[in-house]
Length: 135
Image (cartoon, rainbow, N blue to C red; front, side):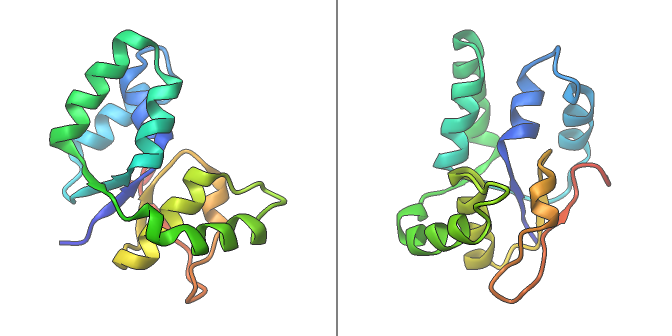
């Protein structure tokens, strides 16, 4: 079964009830039928955006709900390349790390609030399909 890469936006929305995308995040995660993959860069970004009481709730949930890739250090050359190529957007570290993760693991779907992913292209000139708003 193909995996879905998950960016910080939907994860933050899931744990922030007042977030505009909270209900959508809940519905997405209840209905998703694919394994969810992210990395420690995104995990770090989510915890930085959540208030301390919710940080531990998120981390406990993530441990069981997400596949957390730990190969980001091997992706650093590609991450730098992506950040330079899309500097005008700008492509931040988390976004570039997810694109590199998707390329390495042959993942074609992403759940994100960022419209930048409509512009990003893999090394094979393909875009990632954002499934956050389509499920």
